[in-house]
Length: 274
Image (cartoon, rainbow, N blue to C red):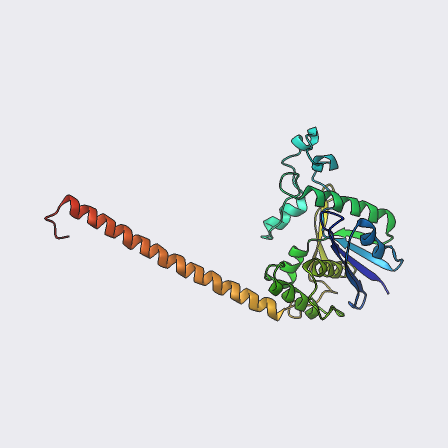
């Protein structure tokens, strides 16, 4: 049976990262937190691993090099390529999906360097396919807007949404957001092996793999997550309340302004009854 690995690396090897392995039947074979590159790579070295999905950039924008992300770097290429952008990240923003741009100034340099290092190492060692994924974009495509992943509500919603997609073997205790993102990355790798994904970007600055409807992908109706629908309804209700509050506050400010103007006229013209 083919295996599909998802990795959510942290910025530092001393901090735990999420790693998940899914079987071809979407049963969770492994879900753990690993420290150090060797622990992250070890599950990928099995011969039956078909795809590995990494939540991290595997290529830099055109003109940038790894030296641009070194601490205190003042290299010439960093200055020349400061405005360079990855086509895949530009496309995600165009679609309304929030995405940090991979640049030395706006991102975590250590996380970028580690992702590049892991990607290069896995391409040398793994016989299967290594791809870049973005779990937040995958969530938007599959479930819409979920609660923040750092909250218990967000982790519960993502765990239940993964179960609705057919992922089996999730632990009864609530996993960390790193483990859940790694599981979602492994699910995207599973979809990619079945040509049920969309690839955005270009060859020079790299690609990001997103879920997409296809012959092997779940239908949109079957992908509906009750918790996600409830969350979207709550978000819409909060937005409506905020809009109503803004309208009320705007009317109150207008009334206050009219009152101040009327008082000013009365001070200038005491005899006026208006």
